[in-house]
Length: 623
Image (cartoon, rainbow, N blue to C red):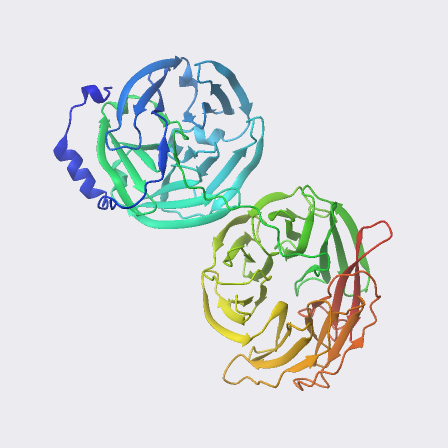
């Protein structure tokens, strides 16, 4: 193998390769570059005899990058099927018995050797070469045989794994290689040689961008590695190493087809230190205080195939209170559950998995969200997982087929969606939903029954907007109301031709009205009801007439009903049968028809405080 000082330039071949890769013109001179690198990047390599070498690639992000020499830093490394140069001197070595961690200091001392973890043994196999990589943070990403991307994360001291099998990208069978090239920056090669680029931000668990086909012809390479900073080092089967650098801001390859060495095919392993180059722009969103209050309503969930209705509310500082209401017997059990995260706030987003277990997604006062699944056969939750977030609102969910979708608004007014697989309970990262200019108000979501979800959001100018989400994008936005304050509620009639809308206005009163959703729908004048304290919640009574409930100024629950179905003549407030006290806003469960014993009524739940300071959930039927 030769370094740059002894390179045999093959200008014609390199030019042909550049053309095949479909690279873009150089970036405009006016664009600001955002990459910074160490003077040289270590590229680790294991030779046929098992010696571990460190090659120094000088100026790794520049068009003049060149190898300046090598030193031997170890022997006996041929016992490992895969060797990965990670961040800040860490090396991950994989064999049939799992993963071994090493660390080499800047002084050249191995101060950590053979720290063993029983994971990732399968990725030591030669058949999975190119399917495992390490990013700038030291996170391991693997490309499964099905084409999904999973993450494995260490704690800060590399003494334990804090996440394993964390699903980042769903399977696409055409993917055959993954390489990390920065903090969550992933390049994915397809079987046709096309290269995609994904930016994943781990702190907030967000997919920030997906760029399809940033290049073609990448099937010409047998190996691709990266020192970070969107720099790629690609080796051809004949041993030539070619140097590239991509710029995200201009979407161009500013270094393309630059040959930096030959003879690299003689080495068993090649891996560049993953944090040698970094982008100076941070994509980590700052923590935010969510728009949440002690009086926020509980989260509720029910499915038509189950007799149980679940309600969950944060228990200040200590955990969650979970109540399960049996709609046949009328009984209710509830428990206070300790939770790994403290200071939970807002309204949790609840779903039911296909095996009928409960799933909870909830947020903290610092805007980090956590997910937890019910333990099989137990009225309790498994350990929670960090699901990122940094959102300004609580999450809200709806189900489409085998998937749930959780929605939340960030501090900049953008809508995000997190997909959850109901077969396993796994959460995927947050993705942009394509809406912006929103107030930090929790989203309302309903499954329509036609393979879509209806979403209600509040725009920054106070308009209540209704749109359709099909699992990919939002379309058909219409305005239902203006002058909206707080969190509104929408209650669609069967058939989705009309809906009841209720919301607070600036003077503290509530407006209720019927609005048309289709050309065949019916509208009626708005009715304004007296001052209240909370946000309204809508439901149907047994005869099909609608009612609105709200927390009153004395923390009682006030109710206003129609005289009959679609009468649109809501009466003045009257006090409900729920017990007054320091309580949450009420939440109404309207989509429940498990048995004839309960199909003629609606369940209302809310949370209050017991004498020991814990939350307790109260439930009452409205017939």
